[in-house]
Image 1 (cartoon, rainbow, N blue to C red):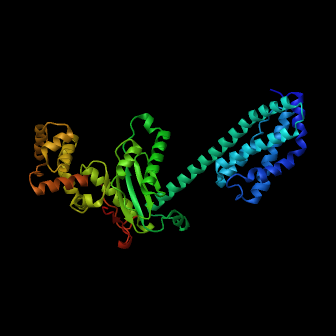
Image 2 (image 1 turned 180 degrees about the vertical axis):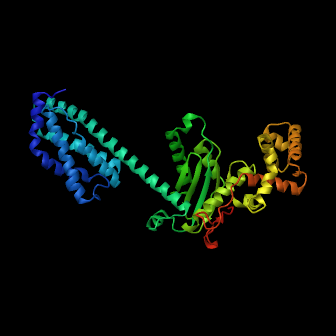
Image 3 (image 1 turned 90 degrees about the vertical axis):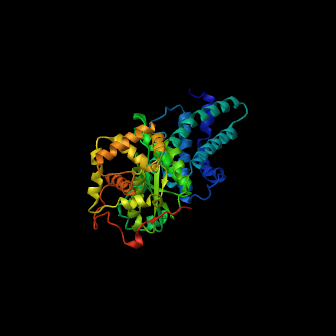
Length: 418
């Protein structure tokens, strides 16, 4: 809606004061904003002053009745993107625009003569209506830029985490020092619950889930955590090698809306991170193969199983003992659960939702098919457990590959219980 002639004349009488008003804004008007005084002088005297002049001249041009142009908000958007990149808080940026609007209103009020009250009210309405578009453009651009910067930073950190886990740390240790990863590190392996349905596997849903998981990790450890995670899990690096609390898996499960397996190993230096990552991943695999429910698993919890699952020339023969059970997943599940429940048939039946007699029948069938695994004897139980673990694992890479174990001084250490 165009201004009346009286309102237009009042506005344009202030046009000669644009430069002085812009200087006043960047000085006394904005000077009371917390943190403004600490900004660099060239930012205040050049960039912010130029933005203020642009805003004032834009108001004058609109007051003349000239239609808005496509690039009217371009400078506001450009400055908002710069401020976001420089880390200037959004509230400070928006306060400058709000106070600038108020300073212009004060100037209009000072310029108004008796009898121009109606024109002044009209200009107040005109000024506030125009300010909405400016604030919207500034906030939108700032938040878009921050989101892009955060995504870039997140990707850089994830790339760094994967590089450290793969054994290719950056040549410049400055980055590691800034992140606190130049010394001891707790390396976490995580296995996440499968997403439920197509909606949960959509990229947006996966990113939301991983953000919640990242937040839960950082709250649990009270520090920044460098994570290389995807929809199924991955690894996370915690500077300072803190001991994970027993409730960690429950906190992560709440963030992921499902049970989470996690394990931790300590690396004394960046060179030990790959071995620590493999150790933690192996502990999770063994805990799963042994039928343990999702939780925070430690090497001490699966010490025997870990030892039994190491590969040597006898490993293929032991793993092959369970080959007759191929295609019978119910028998494998029964065997796994029976071992986990310490061979308590009633506990096994309850865990699987079966009648105890059904469990007995399945165990009998396992003994018949395998022709050698007698679960009634310590030797047979040990063979069954070892065969399960070896079937669920892959051979350890030979020495000299990218995954060869580091020297003893750089090997991961098991995380002790508190």
